[in-house]
Amino acid sequence: MPTAPSRPVRWYNLAAYGSNDVLGAGSMAVISTWILIFYTSFCGLSAVQATIIFGVARVLDAFTSPMIGHLSDNIGRSWLGRKFGRRRFFILAAIPLLPSFAIMWVAGQGFWYYLVTYVLFEMVYAMEIIPYETLASEMATDYRTKAKFAGARILLGQLSAIGAAFLPGALIARLGPDDPDTYLYMGIIFSALFMAAAGLLYAFSWERQRPKGLDEEEAGDKPTLGAAFKALYRNLFSTLRIRAFRLHLGMYLGGYISQDIYNAAFTYFVIFALAGSTAIVSQLVGVTYIVQFVAVILAINFALRLSPSAAYRMAAISFGLGVAIFLIMYAAGYTATSSLFWLPVVFAGLGRGALNYIPWATYNYMADVDEIVTGRRREGAFAGVMTFVRKMSQALAVILVGQVMQASGFVSKATTQSPSALAGIVGVMGAGTIAMLLFGMFVSTRFRLNPRTHAVLLEEIEHFRAGARTPTTPENAAVVEDLSGWSYDRLWGNNPVANAQK
Image (cartoon, rainbow, N blue to C red):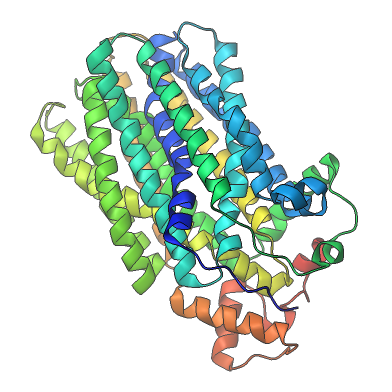
C-alpha cells in the first residue's frame, strides 16, 4: 500500500517542534540539578527518601509511558483521534495540567506530599512527551529532515536547560541562598513556558495521513485499558527483537544514565567536596549547558556527514575526560572558586551535548527498521518502550546514588560532610559515570545505521511495497539484515514479531 505524500516542513514547524523540549529537556534539567538538593536542604528529607521519591515516580512513569504509546497508536479509530489527531490529542489534553510542575517546589511539606506531587507531574509529562516523540516520524520520511527535527529539539532543549541552570542563580542573588521560594518561583516560570511550548507544538505540527481503511485493517476493536497493559509487555519484547533498536537502546542508556549519575552527584560534589555554593553550581551547570548547545550544532554535522556511532564515541571520550579532570583537580586540593574548573566543564559539556543529540537522532529511524520487519508503522510502541527502559534504569541509577551517599554517612541539612561521605559522593560521580560511558562506547561499535544504510533501508521498503520478495542486490540484503537482525526472507511480516502484533 503506497504512503501518502508528505507535507513540506517549514522553519516554523521545526521551531515549534523543537520548542517543546523546553518541557522535555528543561524540566529534566531543573529536576536533575536541583530536586535532590531541594529535598535534602529545604524539606528535611534524607538522601534515601529523596532518591526513593525520584525512583518511585520514574518506575510508575515507566509503566505509564508504554501504555500511552500504545493508546496513541490506536486512538485514531475513535472520534477524539479523528478530531484532534491520535498523537496531538494527548498534547492538547496535557496543556492545562502542566502547572503540576510548580506545586512540586513548595518547601516545608512531608515525604508523601513530595512523592504525590512528583508522581503527578511525571504522569502529565509522559502524557505529553510520548506522543511528541513520535511526531518527527509522522511529519518527515527522509533521513535529513528527521535529523533536522532532532537537531531543532535538542538545540532548543539545550537553551531551556541553560535557563534552568542560570535562573536559580538569578533568583538566589535576589532572594538569598536560604530562601526556599527561589525554587517555587522557578517552578511557576517554567510551568508557564511548558504550556506555551505545548500550545505551539499543537498549532504547528501534523500527523502522517494514513491510507484509507488502514486503521480497520490493522485492528478491529478499540483499545481498552487491559489491552494497553497487555501491549506493554508484547511491545517490550517485540521491539527488542529489532537489532538496531537493541543497539540504539544500549547507546541511549550509556549516554543518558552516565549523565543521570553525574547530575545526581554533581551538586553535592561542588558544594561539599569543592567547598562551593548553590550559586557556583548554577554558574558551572549553566556554562556546561552553553557548551552543550555548541556541541549539539557540531554533532548534527557529524551525524549527517559521518557515522552517528563514531560521533557517539568521540562525545563519550570528551565527557569522560571532563569527569576525570574534575576528580584529578579535587584530589589536588582545588576548590570551586578556582578558574581552572572551567576546563573540565568544557570537556564535559561538549560530550554531554552530543550524547543528548545522537540517540534522539537515531531514534527517529527505528520505526523505519521496524517497518521492514513487520510491514507496519509503530512509532508509539517504540516511544513507549524506549521511555519504559530509560525510566526504569534511571530510577535504579538514582536510587543507587542515594543509597551509596547514605551508606557513606551523608547527613541532610548539614553544612559539611564527613570524609567518608565525601568519598561516597566523589566515587559514585567518577566510577558510575565513566562505567556507563564505557558501556555505551562498546555498544556503539556494533551500530551501523547511517545516511547510506538508511537510504538502502528505505529503498528496500519501497521494494517490498511494490510486491517484490527478493532483494534488489546482495549488498542491500546484507545491510537490511544487519539493521533488522532478520534474514531477508523473514522480513515484511514473515516473522514472529509481526505475528505478535495481530
